[in-house]
Image 1 (cartoon, helix red, strand yellow):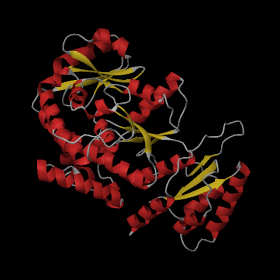
Image 2 (cartoon, rainbow, N blue to C red; image 1 turned 135 degrees about the horizontal axis):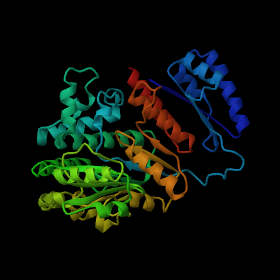
Image 3 (cartoon, rainbow, N blue to C red; image 1 turned 90 degrees about the horizontal axis):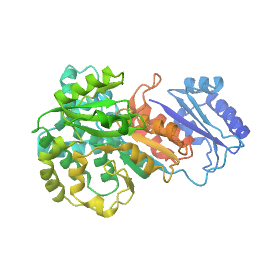
Image 4 (cartoon, rainbow, N blue to C red; image 1 turned 180 degrees about the vertical axis):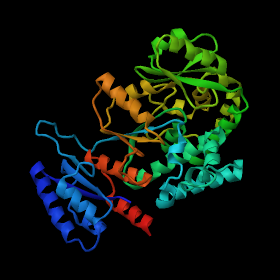
Length: 432
């Protein structure tokens, strides 16, 4: 499991001097890396920052001596770079339903006490009220003989959808323990339930109940397909014949179409014949289209039975592509429209950047929302911001917890305050 050793300096030269001093400390370290990291002086006003990521003392020493940029992350602004005005605000992107198989066998549950406590609380509710429990499918160790069965379970709406909520909400709670607070949020599809919970609109338990009821209702309907298309919304619309709808705008040149199985397959053939890149998504229904209208009134009724409060945080909805006001956020009809209307993620990104964030943190099983944000920044000319994934894959990290720790280091390098004591405490507990 990774150790993080942060180093800061008032200037680039000061940072280099402190790095040399760290190497000397590592040569004689008797109390282990945790003691060395805790002893390093840090000043939150320092803009020049470096973080060593290492698995043991020998690894840390070699990394510092060799200035190995795979394990030594540095942010040292040039003199021409304007000084940051205050602490960078963090915008959080909550991903929609994706390949949960990437978190199969994750160590997050075993190693992080906050993550486990949240997952257990929500998992026990799912067992008691719905007879489903995604925990074993998500967190059974790699090599479990039932892996193929678990993979199939996570593809089911009634298991996979609540599993996504559990994963993202538990990760958010870990980030809050580590001192990272969202100043604004944007979600994609199902991620909106997590954003609404974090904003205080819904209680976590009610959001989870609503997700499962939604999945049960959707499973009553005829199945459909969703197709990712390398076209803008305007370019795609002429292809959408009767029975096909726009289901999402993911970027300036990526949209999602959806409809019945035969109609969507026929659309794919037409697009391919015109040389347009497209690919089917691994979904069971035509989500975010009028195909789900038959169950909309029941979902609205379920939402109306739950306590809803005005949002406490800036919260951009993927339904409207705008910041939700208190009336919109507390209207139970919101969730019916959300289920049957296209995801306006590209519009949401533009709304989010009306007050540009200092950093962006993606929470989800893959990097889909991160990739959309990166493409948006490249195409729009918007004020740049570092975009960090909570669970970014790497050939170097040994686990998802390592990915999370590396993400914390990257946020800190960008000036985002983190609670180093909490991170070290969680890391120590994980090793016991």
